[in-house]
Image (cartoon, rainbow, N blue to C red; front, side, top):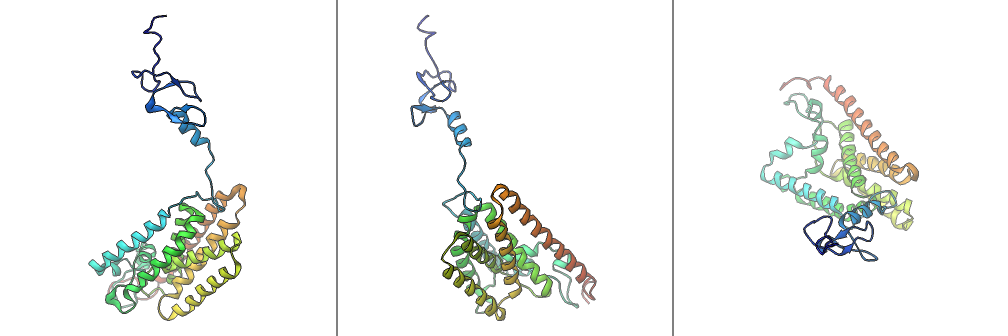
Length: 296
């Protein structure tokens, strides 16, 4: 054997001489391909393969554990950006707020006239200072509640389940407004936040949090629901509370062996129910006098 034939090279970099083997696959690796292992070094491919075979840690409800509440940050950012857009152009609120249908004598707009996007866009808008004293406190209170409760709920559910809960709660609030007060313009993330509040209560009961503290929290939420009836849309709050509670019950009590399937199925079932309710209400609004024409 010649000296040239005895030279060994990295299997990923054939031009780089190497004399160290991967402890897992036994192939030669160069310093740039080495990764520290419990014993010796492993190559990049073996480290990746090992990571795939390690079971990811999960929360009690099946979500991936994450130390940073990214989804909550994103939701707050979207609400703030929408608010800045309202301040820059006030017409944004009237173009995207939650409105079921206009009364007779007005130009036709709203969910009943095909603008279904209002059911969600309205949940990212808030009152502006020009609309009264409640103005900027509207978004401040909602974002503070989202920051305080959202981080806790996201940590327990994981990002995907958390976002599904948030959006279904927001939609649930809009649907109840559509059913009970279709001619009322509403804005705000309160429906979604009430859904998060219901989720916190259900999770607290399921995980054995201090029962007195959890019950006090829920009592406070219900008191605010009643008090807010004179200030804001109680229909949106109640709809979000009911939708959020229903989703979280499915999250919390789904059988462990088929947890993901049951949880996803519950979310889809609720979404279908809400869509059916929307379609039925829209069809009933469409036949009411004055709603199908232009300006009367």
